[in-house]
Length: 109
Length: 114
Image (cartoon, rainbow over all chains, first blue to last red; front, side, top):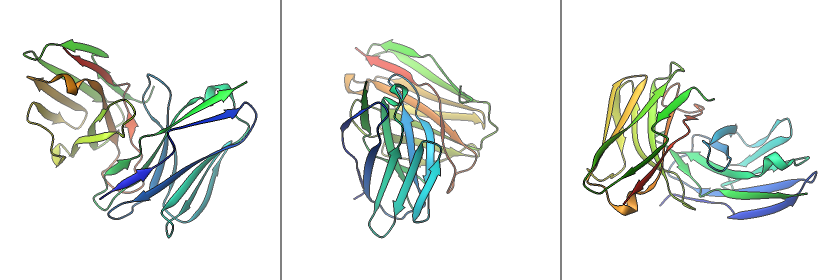
């Protein structure tokens, strides 16, 4: 079967760095996406990885290892507004997104 | 504002009612999606349309009926729903159905079935 695993909840301190991990087992792989979802709002796109390595975009970076079925999202210089759920999703061989349940990130002052 | 709108934002209905959810995208995209989001569960893909043709129906009960009259509009018709169908229903669109096509989401319709 297809499976995406990520921690349910994480807590971090304002100004710190946090890494959110995602492991996956899917039928085919056409890229991995990270989305941010604030409570009561729509998910918004953060990053896309299809090749191994690190993609950096401002305070956010995303890493992919296809051989390990593993990705992480790295958030630096955390701000209170980063409190949200972070969703990992893999595009399978049919170009459908398979989603993880999301990681709720709580930022404390 | 993502360019994808959904109405209504909130809906309360009885099990015998018939209602419809509407989604409109202003991005010129060719693929549209319906998702169900329940608390602490992964997003569940319900339906996918590409160029107004349905390409995916993930074993969704027949009490949910999608309609895509053109590439900008998507509807989800609801009838004789069950309380367990209460959830957030999200519409999304992407430029094409294929790799590297990020999906843009609407704000969702919060559905409560009594």
